[in-house]
Image (cartoon, rainbow, N blue to C red; front, side, top):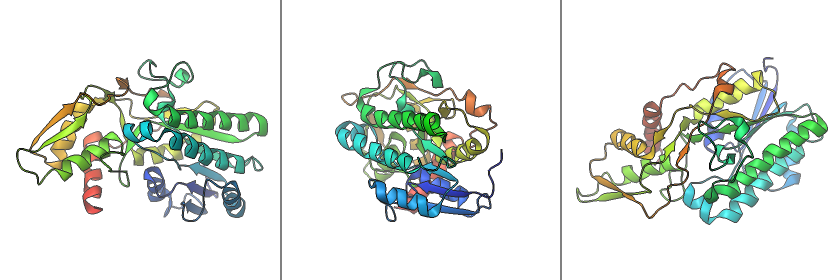
Length: 311
């Protein structure tokens, strides 16, 4: 079924994913009208404000791209905030849709919902089969709750809730904080900030560089959202990724090449590595005709250009 003559409401429009959805949908003729909500117009910690916006705009499709996100350090030190804030956002959006089961809901989760020891590549049926990775388990629990609530709405009220589980995302509008950002944007900021240092300057990187991770450009996720709007309606959540991974060492080498950093860097093995390997099985979403289009080197180049232009 093709999505047309419909109204689209996106929550979290100032974030990494929300900005990408805005680029894809704001000036297109795919929808009769679009509303890109931010915390300036609606407080998602308030059920009343969230319900009011949904009721007044009357969307046919809601994309929940709102979340409190961060890297290993932020997740591990702000555990209460990550759990409570993400729970509140997800609960208020989904509860506000209960009275209208004609709204199609795209709920964006995270690959951190999967167990620490899940077999790689991680398939959708690995969900809830083991213990979570401890450094970001509060965030994961909030996302797991949203999946369960979406499935409950489907069973009890007949809602069409599609839960997308993207891998590690990056791109324009990312958080480039060297302490609280995810690994890829943090490394871009760290190496760029060290360009003018003396030749004796050494950049310190977390861990030993051996963990393997998968990275997806956020614009590929936005395309996946549109594909799933049209072609997917199963109760089971669906993975979104490239199906390919690189070591953090390889990632650092690529970023060094793109940024043009000439000095040394070394690994601080007193810092945590996180999960040894995490790559998703993306057979299901590829069966719908979606493929990632942006390669890692190309994506890092364009992300770095955006970063330099927005310092």
